[in-house]
Length: 414
Ligand code: FES
Image (cartoon, rainbow, N blue to C red; front, side):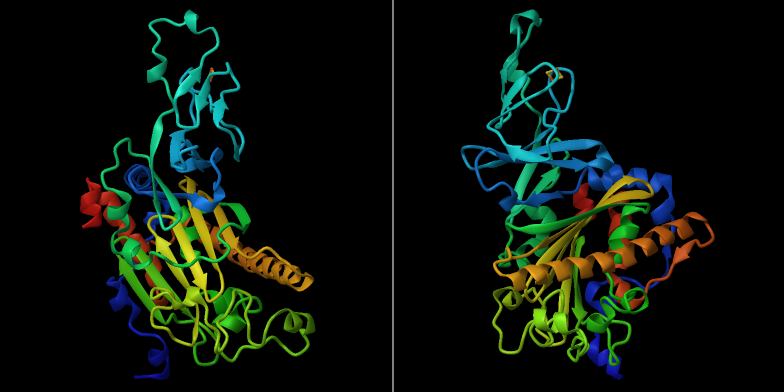
């Protein structure tokens, strides 16, 4: 056993995937994209948001699903229940809600003022007597299947979902339940429109192999080191279509001596994404599925919920990424970094430093994601080759292939 294999176990075996090259057409083929639209995004349970976004009755937000040209209102009514509806008026089809979020017990379409309760019923139609054989009860907002798991709101765009959210999440839902997410009501949001297939975008945030190449100053000092120069992960697993990876930490890292402000901002050896300090008890890191092998040289976990959502967790914080297809080779990206509200100058400066560092790292990522898509579009290469550390990319592609070949969701989940 060499030194590196002591750090990083056989990840492909842990995840249960093969090792051969994968077709580049998965990222470029128009027919593949159409299959993904219909067989993945129209059938899978999709993340809509965190329930803390709408804690009070009447609060709502609108979730756009560009891959299906769908707009969904997610709202909490007086009974406390969260419901979802297509954001489409029963009169002539205008969008009913134009704001991204807000608070209202009823929604009025701005075109001709049809009005709906936030439980979906149509309650107001100007000059109602002018319509023919009109039954208001049949003209409410069209419901969208909606369910919650551990504070996360999911929607499903099948009129009758083939499987429940519980069945869709399977063992992942059981093992990753009850994670004590800190500061779940407050987040910094970063978004972008990227010229790349949604999988090319998601892949980037699921592997550490690229860190020493494109993040030499921002992330590599923390996530790579002499013992592990290519940031081989320390653990991995798969849970039906979902997957997880644990990243390595350079425990010898310390900000350079002349970074006096950074040294003042953070405790010794603390990293920008949060590292467990010796002797520190952090409920987040105690959860059995966070840093599952409970190693001291752990930086953070990437949990990738099929198809397009990551929850990433370090010892002191969590953040999410959503990757939404817009076309075959364009995507929308949204990251949410959950964090405490600053209560001192030092905490405020920590947040500013965090934001600046993360934004720099993402800019380094994004340029390479777009040029990767462009290279694949050229048709020069028929296959991509995946390193063992890119095991989540491989599992994702295998699951995408499985879902697009499966006539029924039950077959895709089997
Ligand atoms: Fe909504 Fe006419 S389209 S009221």
